[in-house]
Length: 363
Image 1 (tube, one colour):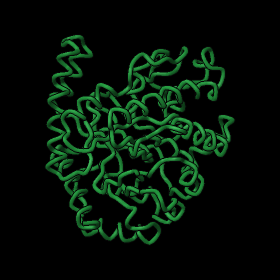
Image 2 (tube, one colour):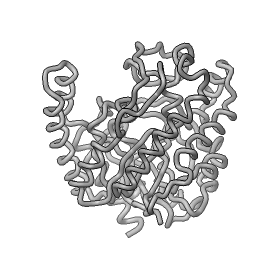
Image 3 (cartoon, one colour):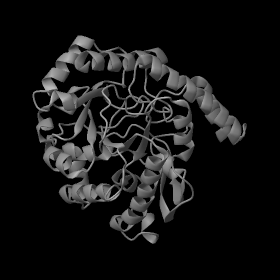
């Protein structure tokens, strides 16, 4: 039986200055990997204490061992090559970093998250969450026409390799006793935005066929696994890179199909601004799932008002049962290592607001 964590958060936290400096020094060859690991360990222990003091129901390591949310995959496999950053045409992507793409057969070199989960399980003293990019996120991020065909003649040819890697990782996390696994799949929100749909059509793609393929691939990464009561939830947002975003629009265009077709225990959904639309699409979520309302923004620092948050929860409960709701920020505080434009104390207050609102809403 999956557990509902009322005071939740999406995973990443702002990196402290010491960690940013150590990661830069490591990238320049100025410190050894074990020295970077020591800095990461200390930062994670501090982050765990902050979450504990804030009153969170589930803890993460802040994704402090990653450069960005997908790097946990890229760092653990072979077959990727680096390209210069693309020109930003179409909707804004919010970043200009070099990109890794598939250039050869993808093979797992090591566990994706063992270095994260082992330390968390040892030190959290509470339920822990590990985040993983979805199959759809990985394939759509790392398959590049003109580069990847030598290894995989089509996008669909890449799916089996990625599905196998994620299935194995999820099985191993469950075996370790990780109680909460979050599948990050923000690119589904492309299909909410008419600009992105038009861009796909101009590239010769059918957006409706694409979403069907993505759903099938993501379900395949979970199908038939013995999850031993672990909670599996999918996070959907509209982009989160240093305060920017890549899309906008209500969940309505995909709500009925996606919420009913994806085989997870719940969804973490972005509802922090007008870009997200209203709560009406929640009526399509099956009543045996949980919806974590992402009501608190991580894109800016000023704190929300708890009374306003409680009113918004009541509004959402018009469309989905109150007992199946929870609350979180709309996304992570540092999806990419640079982090969003807010301070450590503002982040702390946001987490405290999550916990305070959850206690008042659900006891």
